[in-house]
Image 1 (tube, each protein chain N blue to C red):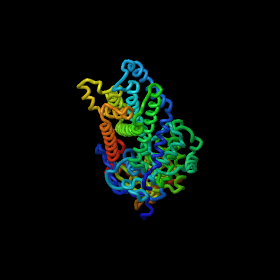
Image 2 (image 1 turned 30 degrees about the horizontal axis):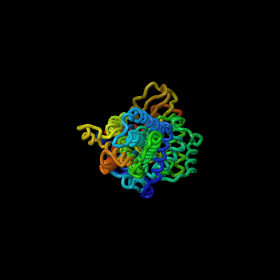
Image 3 (image 1 turned 90 degrees about the vertical axis):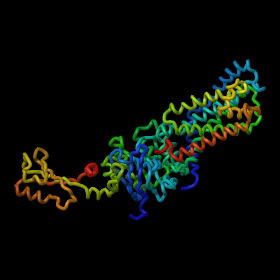
Length: 313
Length: 256
């Protein structure tokens, strides 16, 4: 990976809490400028700990992180200036007005007043009409937008979104996805954590899977799905079957829809998928079919199987 | 970006003053009313029987103590709330993730709290003039001493705010420690009026030196020498700065 393209470099990052709990066990990760990177993992996997360390809210135990070429400890000013953080919880100053709290954030990050920029952010986030409202008067979704506006107020190069759609209704989640896609157009690198697979699937360029403090895998989303994806072949039968013929046992097929459909799950990366042999066998057995359909498995299936492998190991 | 993030200081300072403005009426009326009540009770009722202390009319004698007492509590409460609230609401995440140094954070929060504390001190000073003739022997020293006290107690409050993990803890030190020490520290009497062994015991109370020093700036005399007062005020400042430096270095109760 060319060095120029990396905006964040994480090397051997570890974190042990005072309780002795090891939240991160030596994580290495490169984030490329301009990409959307989804950090996926179950609750307690270390997602938030990693983000918190990079952003300055938690102290690392070992290893190093650079952001835009600045070490997060030695040159924290340089590193933090490049980062906007939207934490998981809705932490707001309830009595402040929207425009004040967003302007405050800009100042906190050392940037001079820029009314045009603040206006643009508030308009982009549909907050402009509410700019004089106190935050406590806003709905949860609007509060989340305020937090994003704060994070963007100082024109960061990297935006961290920690569980951006946790506890958000479906419509708002769609809105959020649209928003993130728009942000990406402006060249901002986006790192989001989620345990909703569909979120990563919808938006991310690359996916990292973290479990128990270890980064199990980092892969381009499409490659990941190709590589680890299973496909389901659905065979619509001419005549329903009451049970699976014993000759088909080695494929492990199952019957669906009252015997009208036969399902076969195969691994796309296997040398032999078993599809053609299965179809040949069906011909031999004189089992007629009128339609075939294959379906790609989702990131969710991939994720579940990865985490299970980990647990089994 | 490097160097000093003065814009962050400006932002936090303005934010804190804005917070004070929201409670402006009570924030300013309360010290006026409290002071007036003290004059009515101590100055009027008791003072009529206790005309002078160390040659100073009793009404005037209690003014430095009154100002100090209010400034102690104001400083501690304002500074501790200023940093405790973001911890409580969670908005501290932003401060911790901002390119702001420990020194800048302290200057901003303590500066804002000290500003309010000085305003309250000035209001009490002005209100006192309505009740008594108040000579000030060393006006510059008086202002300087007020600033020193405001900053020292705000630093102390800031420490308290970082230390506290509940609203109760936030209140316990000012109410159970500072207030009794102030009342027993000669705010309303001269320690020369105490019998032994209380007089000697009182000298272990650092507040005695602070009130005495402030009284000296008014009347040119105090319970103890002004040099001791400055020594104690300076020591308090140094200790608080040291504790805060340690807190930020270790991330004490701010960063895991």
